[in-house]
Image (cartoon, rainbow, N blue to C red; front, side, top):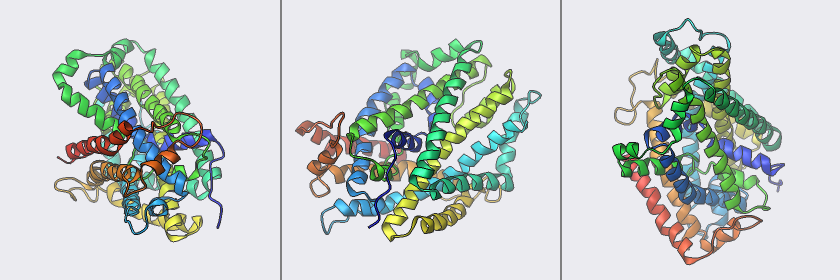
Length: 454
C-alpha cells in the first residue's frame, strides 16, 4: 500500500487548516456583527462559543482523519463498528463540499475580478457612488466576465492540488497565508492612521450595553453562537482530510485552538480595516456583498493612494477565498482517491471537469439565469448557500459528535485516546465532559440548525 502523504511541518498543517477556515465570511460578516451587537461584548460571547462549540467539533473531525488516515466515507468506515452505517456521514460531507464549491468559486471569482479592476485602473478618483456601484452590477450582469474569473479560481485551486500535498497545497498555501497575514496587518495599520478612525474603532470594539439592549440579549447571544459555529466550516469533514496528513506529535485540542486563534485573528483585524476606513469617509458599513463590492470601493476611490490600497485589499480577499477553495478541493480530490482507489491525477482531472461545470449555474445566476429559483424564491447561489450553512454544516456536525462520543459509534474512549495523543492540552477525561460533548453540545448545534432553517 502506498504510504499516506503528510505535511512537512507543523506550521504547514496549521496554515493550511486555518486557510480552510478563513474565508470571505470572516471579512464581510464578522466585523459587521461585532459593530451591531455590542462591540467587545459580542466578541467575548463569540470567543466563549468558539471555545465550547467550534473547537470540540474540530478535534473530532481531526481525530477521525488522524486515526483512520483516510478521508470521506472511508475514514468513518475504518473505525466504525462492523455492520454500522456511520460512514454515510462521509458521503453527505463530500456532497456538502461540492455544494459549497459550486457557489464559492463564483464569489472567489468576484474577488479576483475586483483585484484586476483596481490593478488596471477601472476604479479611479473621478468616480461617484453611482459609478462605483455600477461596476459591481455590470460585473454580475456580464456572463463572460463572471465565467472567466470563476474559471480562473477553479483552475488555480485545482492546479495547486494537482501538484500534491507538500509541493502544491502546503507550499502554495504557506506563501498565500503568510501574504494574507502581512497584508491584513498593513491594511489595518493604514486604516487606523486615517482621520476619524478612532470613532470607527469605538463603534467596533468598545462594549456597548445600549446596543445589546436595543438588539436584545437573546438576539446577541444567538448571533454570537451562529458566527462561532459557522466560522470554522465544520460538519462537511473539510478538516478531516488534514487530520489524515498530520503527525501524532501534538494533541488535537492544542492544534484546534491554534487554528481557531488564527481564524479569529483574521476576523477581528478585518474589522480594524473596515470600520476606521468607513467612519473616516462617512460611509455606512453595510453587511454582505455590498460592504465588499460597493461600500469599501467607495472608500478607496476617495482615499489618497486608494488604487494601491484597493488593489492590496482585494489581493488579501483573493488569498482568503482561494485558501478555502484549495483546501476544500483537496478534500474532494482525496475523498475520491480514498473511496474509489483513484490516482491523484485521475481524481484531479475528473473533479476539475465536474467542479467547473457545476459552478456555472451560480455564475450565470445574475445574467442568463436571472429569475431562476431553486428553493422557494431563492436563486441558485442562495439555495446552495442555504443548504450548506443551515442543513449540512450543523447536521453533519451533530452526526460527527454522536459518532465520536456515543458507544454505538466510535465511542468516547476511542475518540479521547486519539484526541489526547501527543503533547499539549488534553481533552478532560471525566463524566461531566462526556455529558457535555455527548448531550449538551449536540443540542446547542441543533438549536443553531433549527434557527437557521426557520
